[in-house]
Amino acid sequence: MNKDHEVGTGAFDAVVFDLLTALIDSWTLWNDVAGSAEDGLRWRKEYLRLTYGAGVYRDYEAIVAEAASVAGMAPDCAARLSGRWGELAAWPEASSILAELAKRAKLAVVTNCSIHLGQAAANNVFSGFDVVMTAEQAGCYKPRPEPYAKTLEALGTQPGRTLFVAGSAADVPGASALGMPVYWHNRIGLSAIDDVTPVYLERSLDRLLEIV
Image 1 (cartoon, one colour):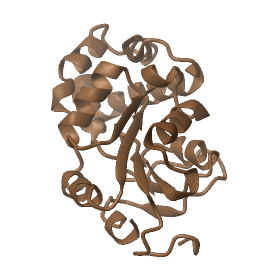
Image 2: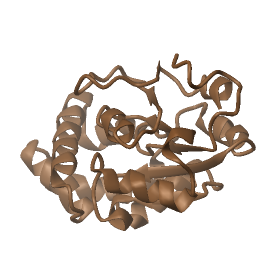
Image 3: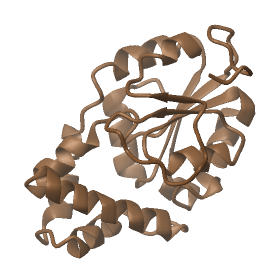
Image 4: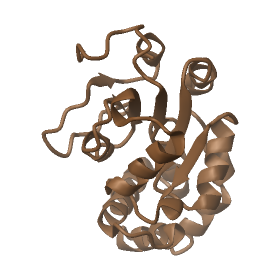
C-alpha cells in the first residue's frame, strides 16, 4: 500500500471508475452474444485493440462491429450486443459499495463508449454519479489523457486526491500518467500491459470501503 494514502484518512475527494470492466461484468454478456467464452474473449481483445489504437473518437458501435468482423464473428453480433445492452449487470458488491462511497466522496465514471450506451450502463449500476464521461464526450478513447483530464475538470478535483478504479489493464498507466492513484480491480486476472503498477491491486471492490 502506498504510504501517501493511509487507510481511513479521507485522502480522496473523488473516486472515478472504469465502467464496463471495473463496475460491470461485461464479459458475461459479450461471451453469451459471441456463443462461447473463447469467441467472446477473441472478439473482446480485438475491440480493446481497436479502441486503444483509435485515439480520436470514432463511432463506438462501428468499432465493436469491426472487431467482430476481424475476430470472425457473425455479422450481426455487434447489433445483438447493443440490443441486449440493458442486460449488463454490475459486479455483486458494486451497488452497495457505490451507495456507501457516495456519502464520502464525489463519484464518476469514465468509459470508452458512446454517450447513449455509456449513460444507459451507468444508470443501470447507480443513479448517483456526479459525472459520467464517455469517449464520445471527451472526443478520444482511453488511455489517451483527455477522457481522464475532462473527468477531473468536471469533478473539480485534483489528480492526487482522486482515486481511479481501473478494470482494464490500459487504465493503470493511463490514469497514473495524470497523477491519479490507481486501484486495479483485476477481477478476472488480466495481464499488465507495461511496467506501471497500481497503488492497490485487488480481485474485488470490497477494499474501497477501507481506503476512501
